[in-house]
Length: 224
Image (cartoon, rainbow, N blue to C red):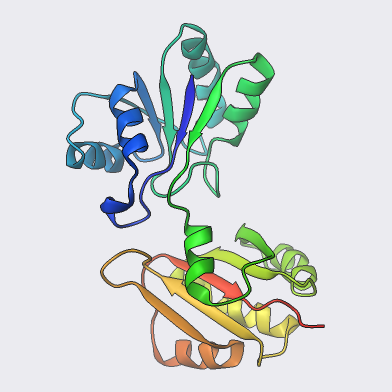
């Protein structure tokens, strides 16, 4: 069986009992960063596990091998570096192939940066649109941002600190600067911070202050 296991997004204490037990019984663990996951396993008291790299650039090549192992009855776990697998991380192609082959899949749910940021934001949680990481090219980003800002959904965007300023500039070009915005960084870690304000206020703050760590941007939904 293939297990999709959510890891903590920062604080190790957030990992579930079920996730730990599943990792402990796995024959093979597929991981984006084997060193990081190896460290996590040692912290959990799990030793001598076979770790296999599984990331964006080798996913397609790995899939036939993983499928063969699953057919042989191996217990295989897929994890991302943090949080829930497949969400802006590799794994979707593997899941699709397993479904086509009639192989069993289950999920061990747990921490999600998307949901955690939404809870912390204070923005409307009933309807939201997750955009993941935006494309690097400006024209492609605009094709996503412009129509999304017209919808009555809270927008959630993953972004790197070095591109945060540019992303907010593009958001501001398609929405009023008074629209509420939230930047959440380093969730569940020691330096967790939630920055709230209008788009204009947060842009002004970024002119004076450099944001560090992993970032999630949320934008208030369009009001009627």
